[in-house]
Image (tube, rainbow, N blue to C red; front, side):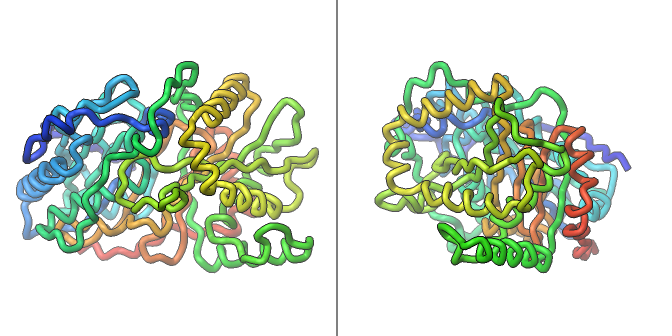
Length: 442
């Protein structure tokens, strides 16, 4: 069924207290400058609470958002020229909307294409200089969805959750369990650079991509982990083979190998194949940075998997080792070179040139597993489900723990023709479980 959502109002929420003049310019870091110009999305779904009218829920959200923006003051500002944020207290758009259906109709068998309707605008809107926006959507049954967008130009996933969970803590009226106050000093660690010649939008697609959710139960993931561990031991191991693959390592290798097999990709002397994993740098700096340091304090570990004349013949076993080596290489030395900037910028420009010529076949993974995805309680209880949305990047996979913690949801973005082949892959299907209706909607 087609979900219809009608926006009934939009207003700008300003911080509850003005930003001091000394803080009215938030400089972007080098890593912020390299970040793609799109919004990171999440939609939090909450079951019905008939005791609270929608108008009261909206007032509650807006008041607590205003309070939170005074602490996260750059999010109420405006981006300027990929150099800084003008922290002018301009505020953040907040929309209210109504859905012509019940909550259960959206999340029992969720369609990723519908998720964008619960967000205030598209993820890759090039003309917007907002740093964040939110939308509250009310269902006929009394349930509510809170859609949140934060610009990737100033935040990574950990920063996203720092804000979301601070907002929800403010809505509950408590500070004891709120995340620590954010620190906006990433530019001191990674100073901005002249990045002329590099386009941060490289890789963003104009064509519409297909996004699907593939759910893997813990038992199926365990089978994959055991399979890769046994294969590594049988082949004589190598770096890191003494450790059983993590859930994300195993699923990444499996999804990539099934993608290569399904699409019939083969070795090509004119193409370079890479697999990328997002890595948090806070734990890899010297000294270690606390989690509340706000910004893009993350990079990607790049592995170059082997693709032969027959595709991938080992099911991704070798990729597990190469990914592990690539992530291990993101160490203190990597961070030190990154702070210098020049070498990394040259690498990014080189990859951009290869991508523009069609010589780079890249597959990217981001894991939100073990992140505090389900902690955002605005006073109505924790969300019954949290969804992402469709991105403008092909060959992108986002991992999220299922609500019950008994599996992983893989949000997969592919070209439409590739998705048709991928989801028809029989070995992939054998490892999938269906999206469970574990909710009580009453």
